[in-house]
Image (tube, rainbow, N blue to C red; front, side, top):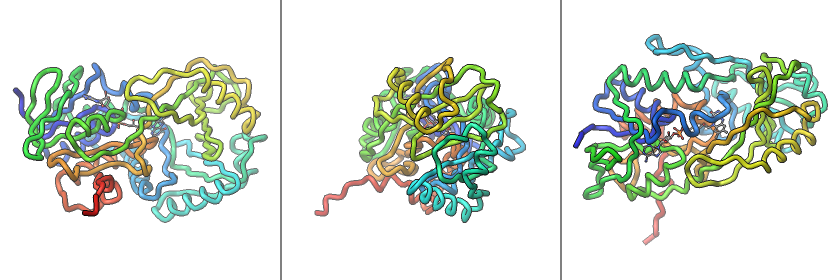
Length: 374
Ligand SMILES: Cc1cc2nc3c(=O)[nH]c(=O)nc-3n(C[C@H](O)[C@H](O)[C@H](O)COP(=O)(O)OP(=O)(O)OC[C@H]3O[C@@H](n4cnc5c(N)ncnc54)[C@H](O)[C@@H]3O)c2cc1C
């Protein structure tokens, strides 16, 4: 039997960044368990790589801002170069959706994030394929961009291991051992490991891992989303920002000489490797035809799907479990886990080491505790 103080389940952005930030604070005896043979097989390796700071949930905005500034100036001892292309973003809106976006932008501005309200004409001059697109105005965020997710994830893991964190790949956690309401270890496919703290960073499996521990019941929903990469498009300018129309549920950005496209589909699935569904390609074509006619008829060369794990109220789940002592959640990162990877890991590490820290209140799993009122 092996023994560690902290066992982190999952080597995606949630687990890797938490380990990195704990280790940077001098914490020893950390083990990451990852069921796959390599890191980034699931959500953290299949996403759109965008750093988006203006988001609808106000509690997330300080975390998105912290995430982007971390990428702009990585710590001096960061182990790898990470490309972060700050092409900016244009968030498009119409009607009530536009008014909501203006409110979101104001919240971001107050949090110190640089944003401008652009007219339709200005946005169309900047990205000419928006010429026939259906929107009323745009929010321009110049410090948004696209990051190399594989380098970023490797950076957290390399940084963590250089500070003594151990990682076991191909090792699935099968049971959380709890005695007298306190975590005492985990049973893995390689045997028992004793632990004082188990960190649930299991992404789409986080609800399953929570159940294994008898923790509070968090109704996390792993929801599939598809991405499509077009063939080379001579007119697609690699300097374009990412363009996102929340109300129409569609975004695109330059990628590999063509465009990466997303119809923002959201179907609940069981945790795992989600299959692609041809009907979503039809949904994508229909959305483009209706709202962005200048980019219709682009041929697709590749598509894939991943899972975004959504919490019931759209806020992350970060904090100590209210039912099982020693069980800590870093889950429900939805569609923002890349942008906020560093701020989530940093917050998790500070809450693990200082349970009285109030910064984590909006994300506390305690909000899912059902009281009977008796
Ligand atoms: C299509 C798509 C586009 C997205 N685009 C963006 C974007 O542009 N910007 C952004 O900020 N976010 C984006 N996201 C969201 C982002 O990818 C996620 O929020 C983030 O990757 C979640 O990280 P995670 O570590 O929680 O989960 P994961 O990356 O899934 O990691 C969890 C890990 O836990 C492991 N695990 C689970 N159970 C066990 C067990 N029992 N034992 C051992 N290991 C276990 C899994 O194998 C997995 O590797 C997107 C997501 C998708 C699907």
